[in-house]
Length: 212
Image (cartoon, rainbow, N blue to C red; front, side):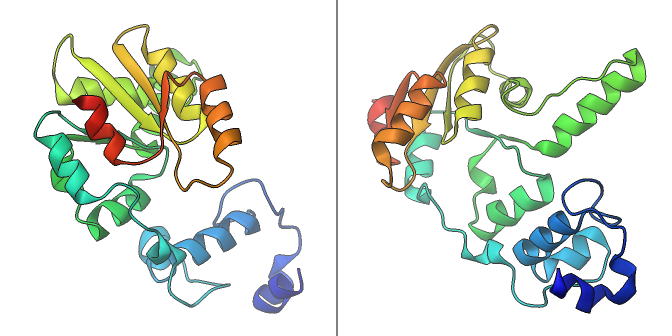
């Protein structure tokens, strides 16, 4: 809090530190987004950086599935992304790693929020379409446009597996858990299987073997 006081001087009084909007009272979210986005924070939020002036930590993200694997998969499959991240953040990674050409559809938090707002306007009903709701997965498949297709969804957290299982009500779907880095492998595998993974893979190349 001393850092908050120094930067905001007297204007920090009354702010709450975990709820609300980033541009008003949510200090925690603002600090997180400034550190994560770095120089991109101002261009996205149209606000000055108050707490952090260095390069964003998004630049330290690494590619988990090599392009050569995606290229091999693309020759046999239509690929899409159902992400819980805002579109701006998702596209930071997709553009930086030159991944956009591999995917026929990208659905993000933005599209989920837009659909929630549309339903609220038309029906006065509040719904939540982020994972573990299957909306983003179902929309990707719809946008790709292959009827009656068998699908697989690859994810590394429980919400991904729950969303893929929920999508089975409308799709022939395989829920594929992915162990990112080998750390705490047994507990992560148990967690993914408990959440509904039909199988768990250890390496990106396993996706090619699974396809074969």
